[in-house]
Length: 103
Image 1 (cartoon, rainbow, N blue to C red):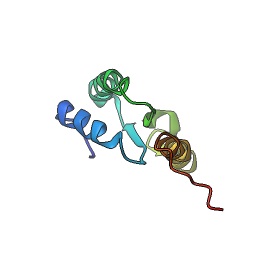
Image 2: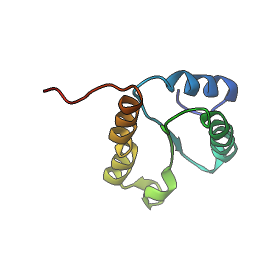
Image 3: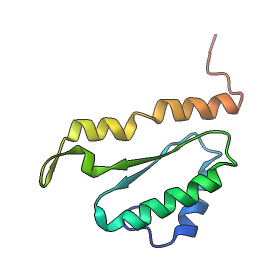
């Protein structure tokens, strides 16, 4: 899903479908116009995610990576997008009682 969140219920349903998958979801807030979308989605998602045993939805604000008016620090932004992936996937496998240790 990309762009403006025009169907919050559909977005929440997709997040809930993902709770049983070894993935991480990152919502990127691109500008001030989507404040309502990202805040509302995160608020509703937090209510729904209370039923999950793990946390796998993260919010990333593009504004925090700006170095000039229309330029971002690509390396920091890319790192921020993927920094939670290992812990999110590991959390999934731990809850699934999946043994990652191949001996």
